[in-house]
Length: 254
Image (tube, rainbow, N blue to C red):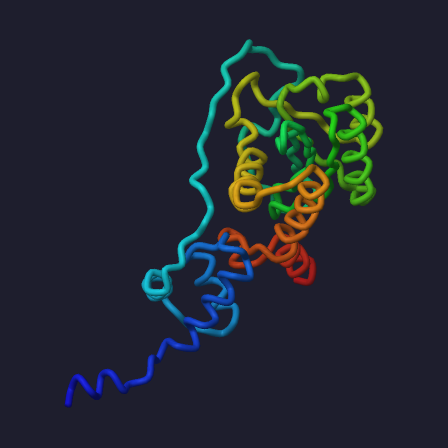
């Protein structure tokens, strides 16, 4: 009789399991149990992360994201601009500290390049450009879009590595015209721009490595979709379970 009673008892987590599965599928397997927990709490479920972890094991749901690996480059040492950021990757207000870099993707022997600017206040990608050749025009387009977000009193630091794009006179001139102060990493030291490297790692782990692309047009469209998702829908643990745009919007209302 005990065994029959157990078998006939309804699963008290049935509704929660369904919502966990729906959330997991909605985010295409990018969420582990920590983000799933925050999403469930945001939906009104007062649930412990250990319970969510156990239920996800029962449901055989596991994040598809690869473990990020750090690959160091050791090159010549030298500074093109002082490292003003000095690994202080937090900002109390928007548009105080920006970071940028360029990364490449390969599809069928062809390459696509992404040049974004990330605001350290909330981790939001505030501007970007995508191109098939790593020309300065890509960086210039990104800068012009970012400049359009600035209020007259906002004069951020813009941190980068010592890539050729950021050493060009036109780059320094564009920043000077907007009273933006350049900052650069030490040569070959990825840790000095860790926030940007982290975004690239997340982008490739959650999007690029999980999808097969037939051509660069598909990749380009996918990058646009993912960056919108990253800014508007992907919750961050350090932002109290909010997306970057949600965090910025709510903070502005306080």
